[in-house]
Length: 226
Image (tube, rainbow, N blue to C red; front, side):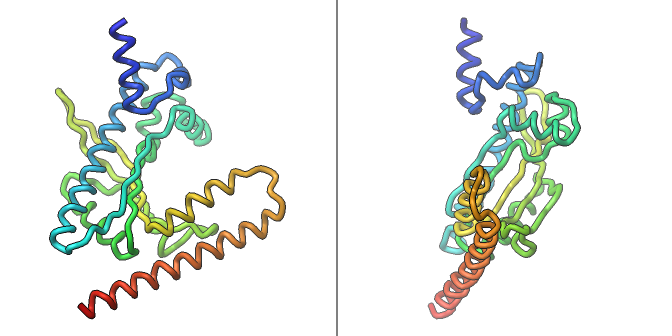
């Protein structure tokens, strides 16, 4: 009974639906442990960004980070991605082949804040940068913009240390607003005039990008005049 109660608490802490445990057959315990490891990695990375934000609020007298979001992929999403990529549906396979099981989204006020925060974060000696994709300077075809980092961060346990991969997305408030709406709209079924909607979404992304740079220019003028 006590074991069942502890399992329930752990599932609540890592946001793991009990009915998804069986996606990884005969690996329920390993799956819970894996999700716990990723949850610890998220907390570690999130704390690093919060500390940077606190430091910059003193040294630069403003907070470049507006807010931070985090998520862990659910078992069904993990298994689907493994299946699409042709990998075995196992915990070992997920940890070895997927880089986005744990995700952090950092929302900044201005575009130059994105690069400053990213550079300070990846310069820390316990962060290993695995991959960097700049979708701000090189947006996706649909207009999506964000800076993506795949990093490895050490997570310390009672008797060992694990290097855990985390995907970090850093974007402005406007970029996040566009991405959220685009994500909702692209999953709508049987949309009439879909081709024009895609075109208009791309146009909206371009307008948002120009607005981001305009707001940054206004901020720079204000700073220079004070």
